[in-house]
Length: 116
Image (cartoon, rainbow, N blue to C red; front, side, top):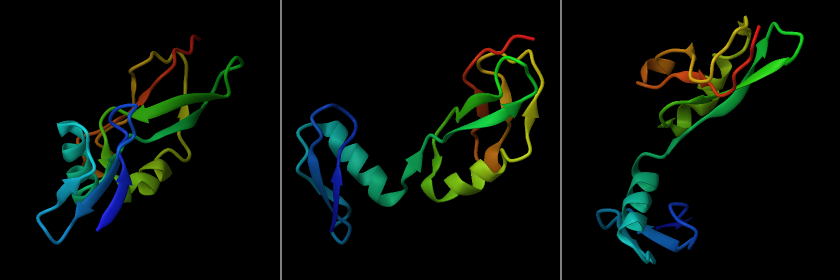
């Protein structure tokens, strides 16, 4: 049994996921809690946020995030890909900084515009 707090909506339901009983979820107040509980118990994923260096006199770093969730176990390895990257302005929000992270169909994208 795993105990989780659902983060899908503000209610914060206390979920119990029975891994021995086909990942049965209890404690949810809506169906979204069932989907979240099963997903979190079977294959947890995360959107990863970080920053990278920028060669700019205005901003020293640019915030980035994954455009799709990646497996939670790969989060730190994904962040290591950002070490040594230095962006050259101009940078537009949505620009791909690292493509195809660790073979997942996710990219690190810039989340801030940085003019020249």
